[in-house]
Amino acid sequence: MVKNLTTIAILSGLILVMVGVTNLLGVRLFDRIAINLCIALVLVLGLQVFMGNSGILSFAHIGFMGIGAYTTAVLTIPIRMKGMSLPDLYPIVAGIELSPYVAILLGGLVAAAVAAAVSYPLMRLSDAAAVITSFALLVVLHTVMTHWSEVTNGPRTLFGLPRATDLNLAAGAAILAVVAAVAFKESRTGLLLRSSRDDEVAAGAMGAHIPRLRWQAFILSALFAGIGGALWGHFITSFSPKAFFLKETFVILGMLVIGGANTVTGAVFGAIIVTVTFESLRALEAGINQAKIFSEQVVGLTEIVLALAMIAVLVLRPGGLFATHEIGALIRRRVRKKKDG
Image 1 (spheres, rainbow, N blue to C red):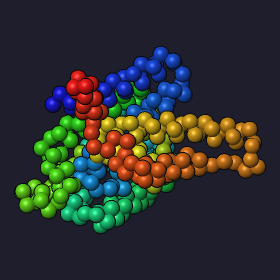
Image 2: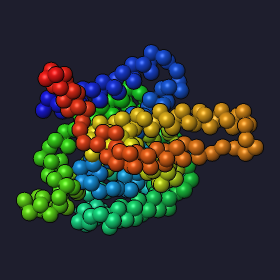
Image 3: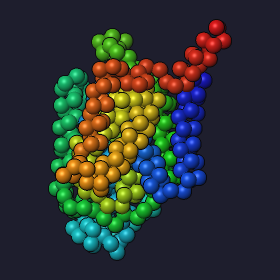
């Protein structure tokens, strides 16, 4: 228990230090980067809850982020603006205007409810079949978001969300996500799920109901994703369905793979490393294009570097930077070695 509290304290402390430094500097660009990082932490930790404990790759995660974003949009866009942003919205919800803070939570709950309704049969699958069906689920969710014009405005940009996500709210959500992810990992469900990841036959023989365990983790993962999507929606205030598809899936997966899918620490450090690297490469890309070093615009530098980084990590450290142990356990082990030495 002590090592879990140490891990939570260290990871939460990193987030609080980032908030303090950002507020001290008072630079708008750093504030934007810090908010994006905190939202990414919520999303990556949600993916870690399912993928890290079950060992099953899920492509559908960003689809539930979209559900959260569109749910909070429908519930919070001012009534006077809904006629413009959602002209075909159903009358039963056209007159609703909730507080963004309530709607953010509802966005997560709706995403979790959808996951609970559609995912249980998929939890019986493993290996390649599970990966393929999760990708198919992402395609289904994206297609629904693209064509359900009454709720999403179709493929067009949805606008009018109130700006409610600031650094304090995003950081608070990220810290809660850290606590929840660590708590789930050390819960009975998490322990049984990891045992099924390591040896599915043995876990089943011991009485573990593997599909139900995966289903519970998948629902919690979707809850994280929905809240992350709702936070992002109230930060960016306008978006379209293309924001919740393959490119974003690749980035979130990259964060988890680089950091280490099996640990909460890996998810946090992966999100930090990839976010800082992305922002640096975007600045470099913009500088190169502004200086007109090449005859044509340089695009895709961030995606290329992320892909190469994933390849390098998978070759050199297949489990990621934090493959098996949380940072609290690593620190305690190092302290113990110094005492013994």
